[in-house]
Length: 164
Image 1 (cartoon, rainbow, N blue to C red):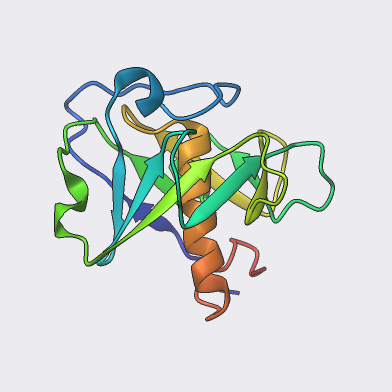
Image 2 (cartoon, rainbow, N blue to C red):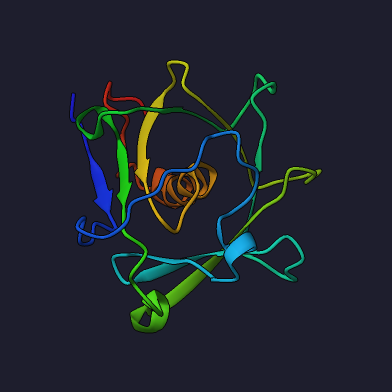
């Protein structure tokens, strides 16, 4: 069994760190006007607004759907997480260096989303830890889901218990 911890977007923790409750709908940028962009390797991932036109990925959160694409648990210990996102919100224009940008829209009403995510504090296949001034828990879960979805065909991401 191989455990992989994906730790990305770790910046200076000396700055302000805010958390957003899992119940918060949508992205933090919708209220602040900022467009968060997340870098993983050479790719950028941008959470877009609900009124965005064409996007690469549409994600719906639904804790009642038994056949969710991914079930994720929010944890309070980064050592237990499969995905850790920590930032202080100071990174401006993060996607300027990206060779490719994937756009992600969180749409609670999507009839045919690419991925449906169940996100709660209940035990789940994947565990995420989020302490971010820029990303909500749902944003972080969507980022991980898209990266998981892209990597799943190559088998490069596994949960802590070895499941893909």
